[in-house]
Amino acid sequence: MDNEIRITAAGEADVPFIKSLLSQANLATDGVDEQWKMFVVARDGTKVVGCGGSEPFQFAAVLRSIAVDPEYRKQGIGRRIVRQLLDRLASRGLREFYLLTIDGEEYFRKRGFKTIDRDEVHPQILASSQFQGGCPDSAICMRLVMLV
Image 1: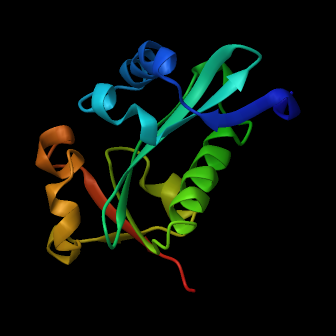
Image 2: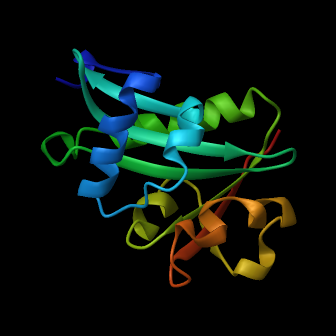
């Protein structure tokens, strides 16, 4: 079934579906209307079944809003979304990635992210919507640095 799932750049028409997936997963929808061009979506035919976004800066980027429809979980779709986002950002020369998570620490640790203190975050990243209130202060901060 996973072979039928395609990961593509999000279109403006996908915004309501992205917001719906994020709401289902108890994730913030702040900034989606403005940042949808930085999202990818997983499609099963025409149905949006997963999403993920990024907020790139000059030296680093924030991954945000990784969500998969409950019926499609445990099929590697989230992993493919994260990989696609990292590949797109790396192709722009970025090697340092951050995220905030409430309950995905173990999931992202398996993908190479390490838990860090917020005072270790690249200063540019602190200006992102995720660090400016998009996520609660209790969220766990994680970082992945790709070697060149």
